[in-house]
Length: 118
Image (cartoon, rainbow, N blue to C red; front, side):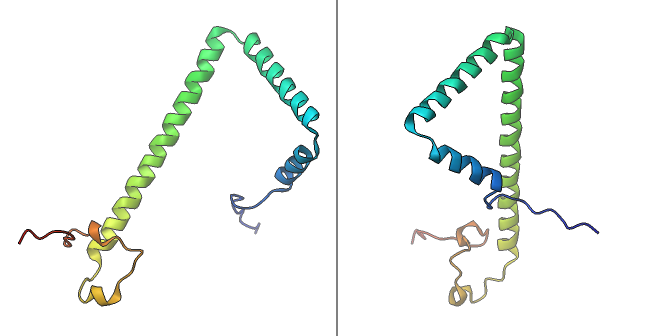
């Protein structure tokens, strides 16, 4: 059975290291030439696209960003619900003697932190 693939989020890949090293080895003039070449290349690409193509590309990018935001918002709501559910089921009897700074006790529905108005 093949090994399960792991994400490469916090690891430095060989390609990223190679690109970073080659960029660091360039002189200031070489870096400026590379920037100018990238600008020219993008200008040619934009000039070769019709107005409809560029609008379609912008619309695609806009929809992709909208989807990422919606997914992120959904994850935030799920995390909040999960924390609230965890805190609502937690036993608060003698909780002051077992205080955990990672818990946000103010989110608990049975806890009132603040001025009592007496």
